[in-house]
Length: 385
Length: 212
Image 1: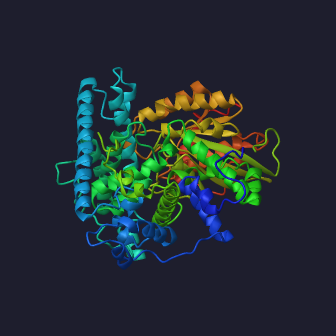
Image 2 (image 1 turned 120 degrees about the vertical axis):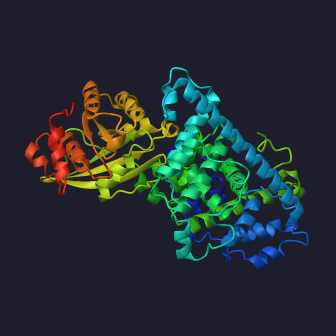
Image 3 (image 1 turned 30 degrees about the vertical axis):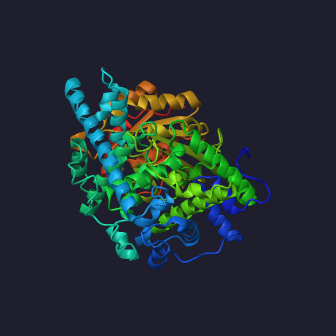
């Protein structure tokens, strides 16, 4: 395995190395760093009191952002704070916004999400029409081989939706939903619950016929899981329309479920997922070049961090690190219990943001933090349809 | 990895599982490994690995199972998974014609990478979905003959023919020719259910032998 990577020889700490990697590969490194004693001071998870103390009288975070990041990167935050904290970590909320501005942003985000769902509905209608016209049967997969090919955008959507439906009814909600909540006793917050009132509902957005049928046929799902699967189908379909180049790829459902559980509001779940995808979408490239790069980097890091282990991996022909493929794609979501995975994610987001800020500060432009650099709507093309 | 001609006491064989999404690759492997089935296996991402030791007469073989993801997106690395495998198990869903049609592509991909230096088994899974069947056993058998590969129908859910599938594979592994047909019955430490025995008898005549 070539050792070409972004890894600096010499003084790089575990965390520095980690930042050059995907979050999941980084996690292995953070874990390794912990074992090796590179560990930074560990704090208790952020509490409500600490969180409130960081905000000014208008509920603005502003200059407390570095404090927040430092706290979260060292200890994470309590599960019930995630719906408020994650939008900052994912740079959806701007620290310079007060409560009123955040409300406006949410209205805006909700509207954008509804537009995406409407676009999905239009595409579904177009599919149904072409279904009738070609009478190619009910399975959308048949379109691929139908004599009259669909327009590319429509074919792309049909394919994405076909796989989204396959995955939605076999996604693991069990660790996350009622069952695990009863066990762990720490996720019974207002941010979770089956009665979502998000943009997906209440605005006339309904699942398409095929999705309804799929869910109805999934008799192995509990009522909670069926509801969650419906939200998941909405979110993933909207993403496929929002970012057609990436579309839908298996593994995204693993990344989306925590968002749906943290955010009762479907639009917030969607936009935080979208932010997360911005970080990791190269892992989903069609030619697998992104993931190959990540695995090569992981191999290079392992080789340096633990030569004995790496030697063993090579001996058993695992030097290519293919075994970490899924770990990287789903950000260790399947490798650890949900709550731990969520903590890991927030640690990594905070860590990366913290380092970015350090760089800005050392570049002499700390004000960038509080301005449009972190505002999702200011000149950002991401929300445009 | 896989030894070519002779079988050493700890010979390792790599089996790669291919086929469209949701045809049951992971389910077949899980049934074989742990003798269980779950309705909610999550999609396989990229590639997954499992291994199992099988005891064959006086020797032991280690099967390394490479479970691939069915989605198109994960296919550019598949040739590198196939490259040094001894066996390719190409799976389709008997209740999904498209997945059956796509097996031609999978088999061709294996042939491109490995030529005839590989055992290929075509597997029609989900035979428990009797009312939804879209591909008959005759069609499956005909396709297997066309491509000169082995063929079997299974149901990972019902536990039907899964052990028979792996017995068939084991018997066809390079270096296993010396094992008598009768002895290959005992390759795996299993108790066959009545249904599985019956079907094995039923499919024995239609199953072609290994091309290797």
